[in-house]
Amino acid sequence: MAKNTERRVVAELGRPETPEEEAARKAEQSRLYRDRKTLRNLLYALLVSVGLVAAIVFLVPRSEESLLQPVDFAQVAASAQNAVPVPLAVPELPEGWTSNAAELRTATADDVVSWYIGLITPSDEYVGLTQALNANPSWVSEQVGRGLATGTVDIDGVSWTVYDNRATAAGGTDLGNVEYALTAESGPTTYIVFGTADDAEIAEVAASITGNLRDQPATAPADDTTEDNG
Image (cartoon, rainbow, N blue to C red):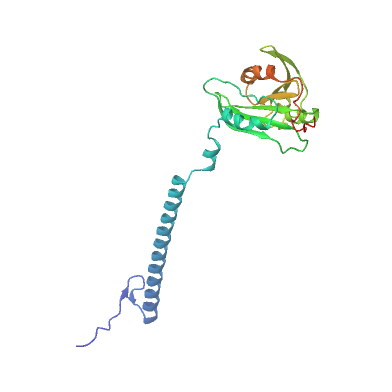
């Protein structure tokens, strides 16, 4: 039986294709097939990768969520109290207030030991409370954003010095979280209440530690490390 040697008529050419044209056509078809197969494989691999990333994000706790977990500052204060010779302030605040930080700070350049609590107000603003022992003026200046005293305010019978830095902040100066601050002293202890909250919320924190101010000793207790030679 004779082999059919008729060649394919190409409509665009109006004639049978030559062996070279047939070989070129088949080579192009083979290339397109390989390209399509490669693209499908790439898309499949991409979908698998996206799925794995989504699973990891869903299953692994994110650091931002961990940082926002509430902190029991009263418990932290109880643990830290033995390291400080004066009563630590533990504000009593109504429902809606939370804390995201509480720590005793000892590693400072000027050797000022301080107790710090970070608070979040019901309006989602920040208020910080710092209680320091034997603070010096330069340390206090740093804590109030190097602002100047703008007056005083009486809160629950305690006179607090006001540092209202909001006008400076409105002028473009970055004050961080110290937009408004209050300071008061009792014996060797200095208190600073500051933050981005409004005056009333910051005053609320100041009022909540009035008892602690009144309980402070007139002078810092001496360390009981002297040997009894008598």
